[in-house]
Length: 314
Image (cartoon, rainbow, N blue to C red; front, side, top):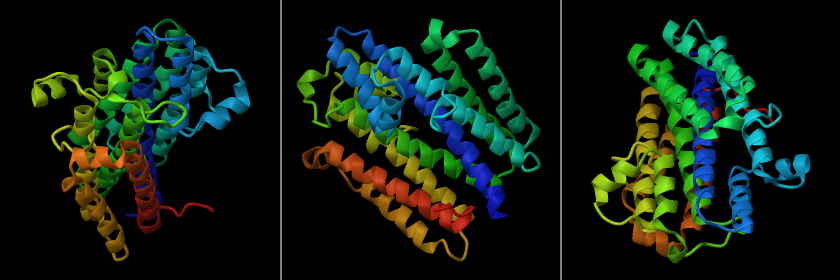
């Protein structure tokens, strides 16, 4: 497959997944804002979200004073923010348009319809009236895109590059979501005593894992078990383990003459999850563990770009 075609497919999937995960992070913040807390704690929560998304400097440069409305505008509607939902879904559609001949009609129409409906919903003021409803729509469109891809596309290299982009992006975002919920904006680890049932129930619901947690543990919700579910449990579709398993499998499907080291790098990262325990991770420090994991996922993405895609311009 031509590297430019693979590049468009890979980034179409990454941008679609990124839009969904941005919606998930914003939605869980809105849900936890409904819990009793001080104004300072609420602001800290929004700053933590911007910080873990590496958008705090850009936000401060544009707005200065933090408010919920400005954060939502910046993270959802701002075309100057490349990680905003509008930017992600626009980029996903443009990448899909560039390779329409490689996609099935259903996949292309799903991407195009999502782009068109997004503009209509934002113009109608859904974000201001019912932000959670808008975020549910974003998640639904991402689910639809994945389902149509699995249900209509030939299982060839195009399909595998789409899946590779999806799970690299999901691993990155699951790690960021987990990190931001364990840590405040100042980067200090929060103790388990500060986390109540409703907080962690909201976090689990943000990754569609509340029912999964109940089936897996059948006990009270604790931060350590939430971390274990989202890091080490391969049965959980959005866990780091599940994502890296998919990355390794899809890399094997598209391997070429220069990708051996990238496959080994991904395999080592996957093995580190397979043979780890939540006790070891918590003893080391969850924030330090997730920080290192995010660095490795970033490096893995760079290696995939080098071996298969259009080289990144320095």
